Length: 359
Image (cartoon, rainbow, N blue to C red; front, side):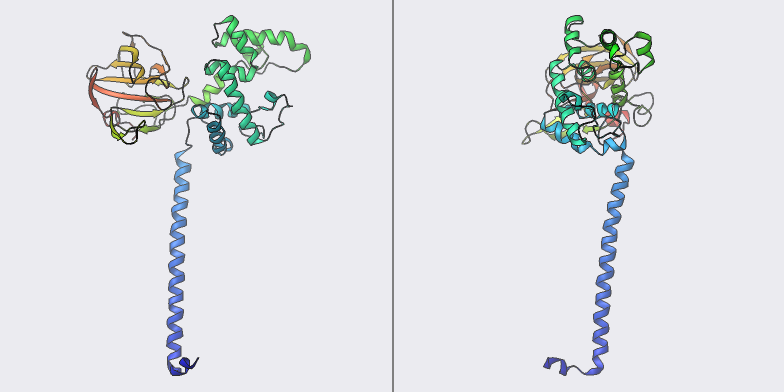
């Protein structure tokens, strides 16, 4: 305290003024720093909203908010490749407006709407995995069986070689309705159900699910000129053309000869990028199922497909479906690998730059 007596009284006002000025400066700096930080966060949130959702399924905001839960249980049950299918199912079942979002209570023998949101999602994922296995990976058959019950799989095995078809679904629904209509538990929920007498379950279930997974392309559906985007639905690039880390061995660098786009296995249509003639429809090492199209001055190639919709010699137009998304060949998961070549088997160029697609 004795040091304070050494400071002349006339200097105290100056010292106090300096201290207050420093405190004001520190406070103002902190205010502007945190304001700027908060501004960056708000900008990021707005970009996120403007950019839309992270996945392919077109669902309500209520369901999109539940995507982390779908991701969690899909990962736990090895169903990560089907997250968007599962979310589309939930959209059809409840639109996100019910607690039992996947309407999965009945698969446990419980009354409808017994389960809460997270329980419903977990059980829905587990049950769909079960019916998908029983359907030998046929997504359409599994989807309709999720709605009808697994008895539809046995019916498909007996009457259609284990494959789904809309006519088969109508026949099964009509048969079951004739058996159970006296219970009063079923009604014709669609005009086509009433006209066909197929009022057991929802014969339009598969079409409804696909409607959430197949939407207009971002940007109007074409690149520059007469070129079309190669996937039907949201265009989401997952890997660039050129040198990259080997996805199978991170210690190596490899040359990626095309561009990869996200898609849903067995569901997303793969489209021709331009008018041309199909030259190859085959299985190639690494590429898996592949389609190659001759466009005159260049070729396009579509790899890792699950199934084909064209044959060699077919003429196609820009935007025509040529195949369905898959995970065949050397692939880390369902996606389209698109290549643009100046010759049938080589001279690769960057599809993004060549076509003017969104990067």
